[in-house]
Length: 468
Ligand SMILES: [Zn+2]
Ligand SMILES: [Zn+2]
Image (cartoon, rainbow, N blue to C red; front, side, top):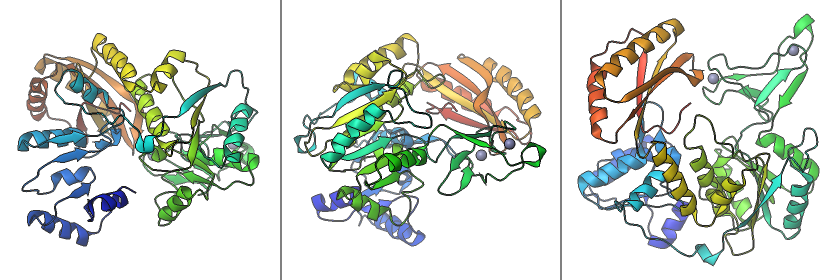
């Protein structure tokens, strides 16, 4: 959709750079950039490494998007790298967002960044209203995840030919499967995580390593297992919707359904309102323009402060604004309905407020008070090995060593929340330090002088986003 808009506006096609393009095209673009024939590149994270000679400007769209962070292999945050590159080359950089990340918000507050605001929404549409449906009162039927209250509201929208989105950020049918008789679950053999049941693909899938399995297995006494599918994924919500609204077209909008050749066709159908109900994961919050979408149901919003994730609240804010940005884009009244058990009224009020600065200001104060990023530097050290014993021993040795080399606080080692991924056990240390380059420098020196045993790997994640 973005490429099309670009062509309409500028009258020429930009060069597109992402992991999916062919080798041949990569070569053409690479050459075009060296010879300065290509003037504009629209690129994913890796486009920052292209050999621009005379780069004039960088624009980072949706700067708050946490997928700019690459968590595997070489760990880096493409947004921050873009900022560094612009600073080295002494060129302007524009960070674009509806709701800034907390780091960017802080940089605006301390006047490191200049801000300009677009005061009117596209086509002057107003932001949607929101309503909360208290699931403690609106009791759900068994094996049902949509309250009768929400169904009534949705019916009204459908009667007006509004498109409806049910949002649930969980792929597949059910995230947790176990047997009533033998009580066995399905764990990934490579990761310490449940396999998610995908009914359409008829398999159980690990969302971390891609391990696949099926439901066939022997129960006790050589019987067949009697499965309980616990909790919903988008496929399950789709089944419920099919029962409630048998005459409406619906589609699941997730990475399982939208990375295929026909996804452009599906997008067309959504835009032309041939599909009345969407059931979507986070994928749908990313910048699409669906003119008839005027009703969003957030199936289950978890507003409890999310334990180990210091960005939990910020993520909820981003998600809400991204979602509501999808609704009511052509000026018709639109509503976002939240189903929730957790009636954190203040939190809901803050994140749904049309002015996100209110939330961000509070959140920033909280971070300052508790000495959290962006006021302090966090560095995660993740030590992994397929030898659990060796890993435990080495991580303590490493902790003791590194603590003597740094002035900063080193926390841990603790087992990572996802203790095993791809057969490797994982232990985490966390360094909390002042915001200066000093800690990075001392750390990189110290690491070079520590000899890890064979089969032990260390990853360093500066300004971590994921704490899994
Ligand atoms: Zn796995
Ligand atoms: Zn069983």
